[in-house]
Structures are given as structure tokens and as C-alpha cells.
Image 1 (cartoon, rainbow, N blue to C red):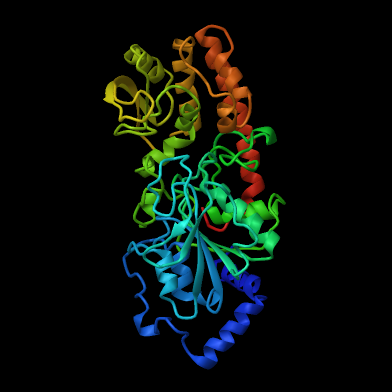
Image 2 (image 1 turned 180 degrees about the horizontal axis):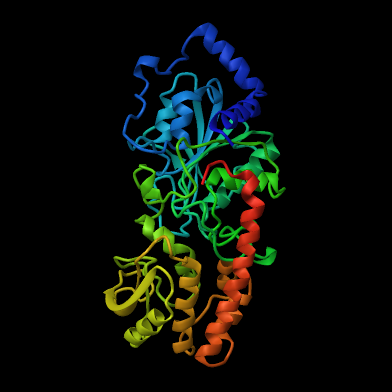
Length: 439
């Protein structure tokens, strides 16, 4: 969809806000409200060079009419910044005629510093003075009372392009809550850091859906947040009125470092975009007693255990598979206290990306876990449902644990990966009508 057409559709979406219309008339008649910044004090538009403008910058540069005169709720975190590093919430607060009345934060909190899975309390943002409601704690979606004074709910969070990452599911739950409350949602779009034209893994069965996968999307789903929101509504999974402010200059085949947007680690353990690339497969280890590298210098890019003394042999076996775009090496790493094997130095397998354009992260993680499990079947333990919730079905556990020779083990896993490839092709075809960007 062309940018102008997308913006026009968003404007139509928001045009029915009666409070906004009356507020806009009051503003035009009475001038700036008490405490509002005058136009001359509004932060300057970011002029930092870059090929791509995120949706938040597009909104503030030439589409601020979509929120002017409206009471705004903003679901965001520390990744909601412009290319100059300024927070979207601060830019909105400084914009005449825009009233930010509520902030909502996903997993890891508004600052992104909280540990994964940690329950986060609500509070107040010290910089803007706006109340912050945590959507990763006692509740996972705004209540009707929280949205009562909101005219439009904005979403501005950088995702990693993997189903197991909770941010887009917080978005989906907020969309549903907004729909039930009769409030429109506006997604300020951001890049898929591991390319929006690449997909992988299978779908998730209804019985295994949680906050790490609420709807039938792939493990590596190949959409931007805005495109995913459009598909969720268009395919009937979420009932809500949703618009998207698209990025300017973005192409679906771009890696994050090709966009010119500075990288902001979306969570403490995804420190580089390369980690995001491996995450769709390395995340499987979170459902095991094997370290996924948390507490080391290579979180989600290495795995290990105190009993993995055959790491050099395992690395050679993995490299012999010829998995595209990666190689494996054995090492030993100290693990920080509080993590698996914390306070100890353990044998580990590093996953090294040699050609990111060829990496198949789901297959990489699947075969890595297969070989570790086959070599140490008596030691590897799986969470009761954790593996199914991450992989999407029980078939992955069955492929890992069925008895047989090494050749049989690989054949079973390759058969499952082939079936997942078929699901990926079908999903990509089904989502194509909701794409916003050229190849």
C-alpha cells in the first residue's frame, strides 16, 4: 500500500472521535491549554541521515493531525525513539494539541531493563510525569477503565520478528481491549530486524497458545508489527479498529543495519541484531535445563551445560551437517549467578553466523538441540509444556526424543522441518494482502 494511501486510511479511521473534534475546536478557539508547549519550543524534527524513517517520525513529521486534539494512550518502551534517540512519548508531550494521558509498557518494562519474565509493577514516568501501566504482571491488557479517557491508543515498540517474543502479543491483547472499548488503535510501524521477506518454522496449535504465541503465526513470521496487526484484524483473529502509520523508505528485504535506524536492544539479552536472527531457533533451549547463554557474553548465541564435556565432538558433528550460514565452535564460558549453571565455568557451543543471508535460524536451533539431546538424553530435561509452547506442537518433542540411530534422528527432524516449510509458504501467501512495503 502506498504511503499516502495508508495515511489517508488512518485519517479516516480516526475521523469519528467526537472528543477529539471538540477538543480541536476548543484548542483553535482558546489557543494552547495550560502547560502546553508553544510551537517554537517543540523539539526539532530529527535530521539525522538515514534511509528509513520509522512510523513515529512519519507521524510527527507530516501526519500529527492524526493525534492532534486527541487524548493519547501510548504502548511503548525504551525502543520507542526517533533516529536521534529521543523518546516518542517526550516528542508527543511536547507537541501542541496532543495530550498523552497514559503509558502502557510490555515485558521488560518501560526502560527495557527488567529481566525476562519478571513481574513489573505500574508506576509513573519520571520524565513526562505520565502514569505507566504495566501489561506484563497482574494484567496483560488494558482494562476498560484504563482506556476510558483515551481517544486513540498508539503502539510504538521495536520487535525482533519471532513468535516467542512477547511484544507483538501484548500489542494484540491491547488491540482487542481497545476494540471492546470502542477505541481506535494506531500502530507506528518499525522494521522487522531479521527481514520481513524471510519466514521459517511452523504454526502454533490452539492448545499451546500463550503470551509467547497467541495466534497462528510462524516461529519466524516475516512481518512488521504494523503488517501483523493488519493481518490479525483482516484474518478475523482480533476485532478492533486498527490503522498503521507506515515507515518511509523501508523495503521488506532490508536487514536492520541497512535501515539507518540506530539499534536499541529491545531486551537485556538481545543486544545485537545478529542475536535476533538466531533467537527463533535458540529460544528452544529456554524450555530445557541447558543454558541458552544467558549470563554470558553471548546470550542466545551459545548453549552449554556443566556436563557438555563432549562439546568439541558435538561441534564437529554439527559442522558436518552443513547447516547454511553458520558454524559451531566449542569453548568454556563463565556464567553469571542467577542463571542456569550460574557462578560456574561450563563447556559451551558457540553459534557463529558466517552468512546471514543464508541462515535458517529455526533449523539451526532444532538440529543443535537434537544433537545435544541425543548425546545426553539422560541429562537433558524439558519443561512440561514449554517446548510445545515455543515450537507450536508436540511434533518437535517427538522428533527429538524418539529412539533410533543418529541417521534416524536427523531424518525425523528434517521431515518435521520440511513440513514446517510447507506451512511457512502457505502463511506467507495468506499474509501477502496485508504487506505495506515493496520487496
